[in-house]
Length: 100
Image 1: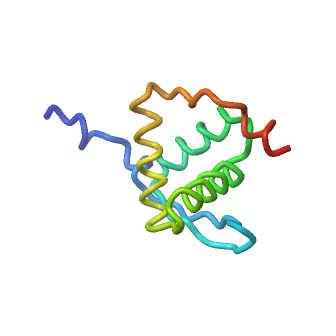
Image 2: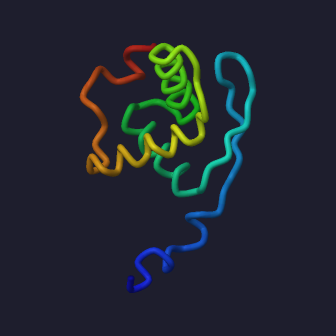
Image 3: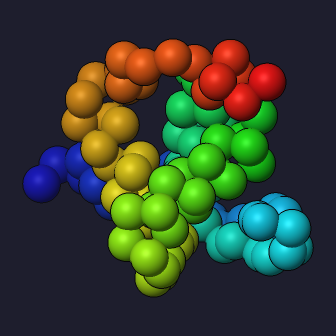
């Protein structure tokens, strides 16, 4: 495979835990650095900070499904969707404007 995958910089798959307040409760989310970088990029595209962006995703997931299962895995999948779409945010009112 020509080292396409195994040649990745180790820093990208090192993981980091971040403490985030979700619905008033402090929790810790552990993701690989590559996913944190993508979530930071996605949040910036929405004109909000990363914790706010993650909160909106959590709230939308809770509203849609009635519960949130395996949120860290959901965040990874959201990042994959974002990259598969060419790193383009969805067209909607910016989060910063709708939650000001």
